[in-house]
Length: 420
Image (cartoon, rainbow, N blue to C red):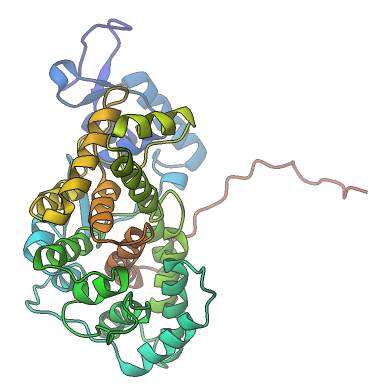
């Protein structure tokens, strides 16, 4: 419903998020992204139910999009891609129409991955890594410098595994699924174990194998369940930057290992997968100080954004964070870190209304499990590999090289003489 309420600029025409999306020809999630980037301004609707946008701003953005891109305002820099995989709507998200948080809580990561790939349940699914693939990946990872980060290791492992697979260019659905079921456990097996004296954990559920690469502590059942659920929650999240890179690679018919490598290259960005580490370090600072106020004050004084808070696609708490916090509340080791996370949210809310995102929930899991700050990035990358494969499979079924936007040239007008 259009909002004609007064306040600043009494009489101005206001649009709901859904109405703005229809004018722009984009999804509501994209409208939220426009607001977070400052392309549109929003205002809480009377009664606190949702937000409204200035109709003149929306229409101006739509006109600019048609003028510059020859299409809707989502073209070009805000590419829209038809997908059957993930829907984000009204602070919830869905995998193939099924509530993703319920799916991740009730099913293992491997089962969530199978659902994303095929749309068919596969109870008890367990991924097994082939010996030659693991051996090649481990040798490659061991050759890296000691200061190498987790995504460095995963990226090198993916390349090493690919050269052991002479049939990697078979892009049929059956072959790609076979690659996916062996690549993900290979990536985990290539990571060094935290307890070098003990035998490597290379069987059983993937969450148990990954825990042994992240923490030297023996996990309890509730901790393993939380890690397994975190993997499922992070398996996909629509067209994040790394997922778009994967689809571009798949559009050029790069094989699955190369497509995953493209995603790993992007996820290392500080505004993507690496954001988990900042939330982990912030949480440790609060635990050391005993209260969030001095730590948050120092972050704000330094002009830094508070990590672990806010998400452009959700107006309230990130549903992935909410699901993880619920599980973490039942883990005694996580209680202090969970209380510190709640303190961070409450303290920051005094000056800006931001909610917890999944980075903060991951920080509680990793900090309470005795893991390094980079552990969240590792969890994120391993989990998202399932979604990347699902998007690559979709893209292999589309017209080749369709992910080729046109550049909007704004340089000197030709012909221009060569500078001397």
